[in-house]
Length: 327
Length: 233
Image 1 (spheres, each protein chain N blue to C red):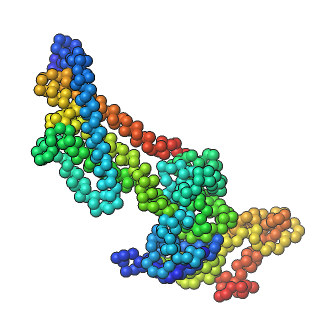
Image 2: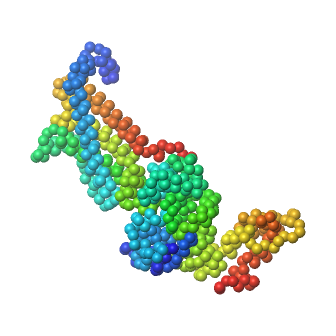
Image 3: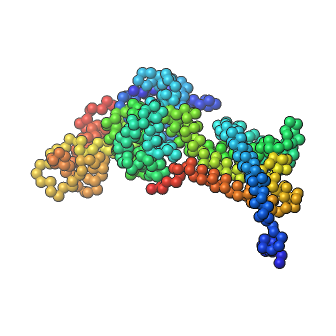
């Protein structure tokens, strides 16, 4: 668990803090996304966790201990670190790159080698093909996979990720995001994830911390709540006018409670259960139909506009059967 | 015929020989080989001493940027003093005897600018994100310097050593003027005795030595950068 307690950062010679009185908790095994416009101090906040930047006021607790309890280098060896520009060592092979922290921690060779192979497998790169290559031989997406593998190498309970999928094209990025979420289901790391992209934040975050200029926390909540109940003008404009549609992208059609489709489903539009509700809605509208069939566990469910409205509950001020919201 | 090349050819084929092969054979062990050995000694010891000074100064200049302009100013002045004048100045200093030591001092002074500049340029060429990642993973400053920055800077540093070495091998011939030894001895003796064979032997060997040193260092530069030789996908 990571706890920010009234953390502020002011650089010498400046009277304006870049991070001001920041307090929030990242629970064990959760991804907390720091998001906001440039200059909001999100990267600074992340870098204060492993003390690449020192705090001016307040403290950051890791599992109840202030992160100043040990030396900066020792602390950093216990925290995974992945950045947008990746920063692979160009003069080291992929295996050496991934083995960096285990090597610093004094693991023996055999253990490092098997860990490297295991991680290459985890991130979807064949160990035999890649371990002896140099970073320059890999594509951008492959390098980012290696960057993530390197951050995971010593199995740190905490990871810091600064736009770790930022340096690749949108399609590759989506693939990497999906893959990382799948990996995270197994490894359950406590992660501070920085991005400027609200869509990435919504997709990756268990919690989202929206920061505004001057490093002030605007809202800290689950993606669902941030989309349905933005606290301020700033948050609602930052998440965008399409926040209702964004909420639809949080759910997949397979997860909806659908009426069974009785009788003939011939001629009806069929929608894959893996699609997000947002994409399904888009298909539905595009097809000109008012209903579609979703096959799940061998049974046909009926996706209708009403079903989607029900899913949205009382959001966006619509009077409906909701009432589960606290607003 | 006024073409000098043709004149030379005529000399070589005709009566008066430009190169006295017999003399070369007779004096190889006594004069030529010691001169060559002396030259190799002068050049290599100078480059080695210059490196011992330039590497730490370069590393510190890269780190403490304010020190860099005065460092380049001083070494730049040293670099621009005519070599003959520098030798003369050095032997006029009390306590500096005529012989190899003032030559070595001068050769070191000449190489400093190139070596320090390339050390700083090499360290500057290390991508900032590579250093950030290294720090973020818990490498200490010393580990970052020795495991990341210097290995990545090394090819540029070696490129500087190449230039410095070739320069030094050339300038070292002048060192014979103050009894420094080396191939310059053959050249100066040849001029005094009006015996072209000695001049040519000294000049050809100095040139050959510069070329060989350059190629060896080029090979070293390539060897130190295996990651740049790989094919890209």
